[in-house]
Length: 358
Ligand SMILES: [Fe+2]
Image (cartoon, rainbow, N blue to C red; front, side):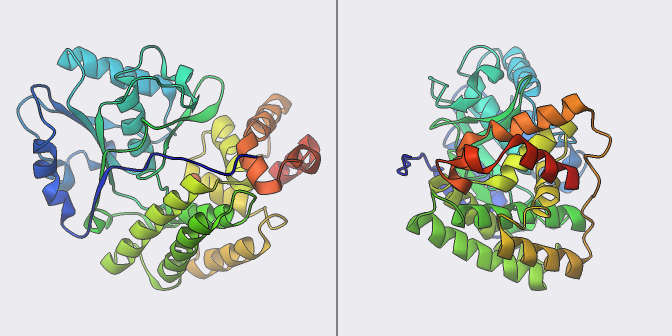
């Protein structure tokens, strides 16, 4: 196993309440004679935030629907639409939204300079040309998408990210004031993505001092938020925003594990959103993460969060097989969680048995 990861981090980062108002100045430095394209969660259509986007002359604002997980086909459509509208690549792509919108922004930025369908680039370092300038602005905290080297996409054959040095944002804008309008369940599911990132990062064979330090601090912040915070509290949103960032950074040097391997299977076959899929999976993984799962269950009970049950009931044999295939194909996650001999430690039958409990 190669434990040394030489990863591309995000370029510039601004953090703090009001930082969204600096966006116009930030983009001015990057403008040439093309335009900026803002990819925005369609949740914000007609809301205040949409009016605050610093749109200039030829810029485009494209609202993106993220009711389902990001798809390679949507990335291709967005890329084609932008090139058609603008006639050439824009000066920049700015993603404003949760993890899904940020992943779209990262993927579209890469695909504007790399030919063919995005499904061709699902994997590690498959894009050969540098992406266009891109900016990530989270409006939900937890996924770590703002800082990750991956744009996670569901393609025709698999759920796998476009991962590599051209994927990370050149700039992120972390303004906790943007995160004050999130339904409670969603706040929990997305925030818990960060909690689970930390547990997985810390518990596995790629764990290391650098990743552990960030994961521990992120975990500490998650605990503060979910013990005392609420989704409308600025101080708690600031903490969750930093937790998401540190958790995502920690993963850069370590890896996700069993929970993400299961959650990708749920998302691929059932289209379940990432945060909630993680919660459904983590709930059943006490054998792998005993302390983390015990604490998770306490938080769920105390906050009165609804974790769906019975989601795999009624799956056809073919769907279950596809789910198991998806899970076991994520070798890097299993190698981290269980070590080189992982194939002897997690069988198809075991995966099926765990899925049947979800
Ligand atoms: Fe995640």
